[in-house]
Length: 185
Ligand SMILES: [Zn+2]
Image (cartoon, rainbow, N blue to C red; front, side, top):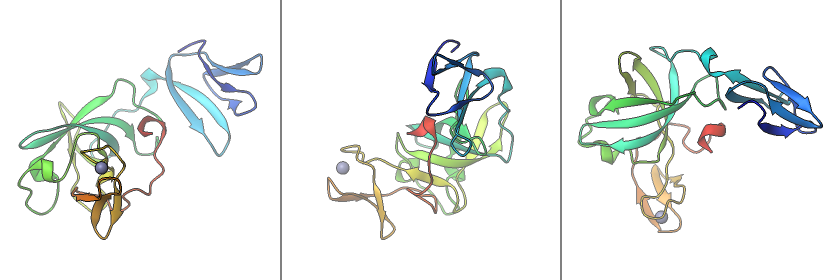
């Protein structure tokens, strides 16, 4: 939001949509924060400048609901725009047949509410349809359903060190490894 203090001038240099004011970096437009760590630059991109989610693109999201034959996901990032939260988050749907190559009896065997996932857009309009078929797609971070501790991927199982129990998900091949952006921390 305009006037919002984002950081100090010692931490970052101001990019588009940001100006320096008494050693502080302040937003000049309403939009989405963009932190470029390699250039140490902070900028704000106007909401209207958001690219549309297209068929075939890769998105990140958080599972918000697990039903009998589909899963709902709040899409918060699009690939190539990491660290940028999509303005007015969109809800995507993963049908049970689009979770995995093999037969999936129930989505709750593969996803739980709060899981952070990577998915592919198979239809963008009128409803956002996603797929997690393929090794690259699936859960990147999951939390224990009992105690919410982040689960560790050990011996092809997700393990809660606190409850000393395992859970199952449709995991992405790089589970736990990708550096996730601001919206997913
Ligand atoms: Zn636990």
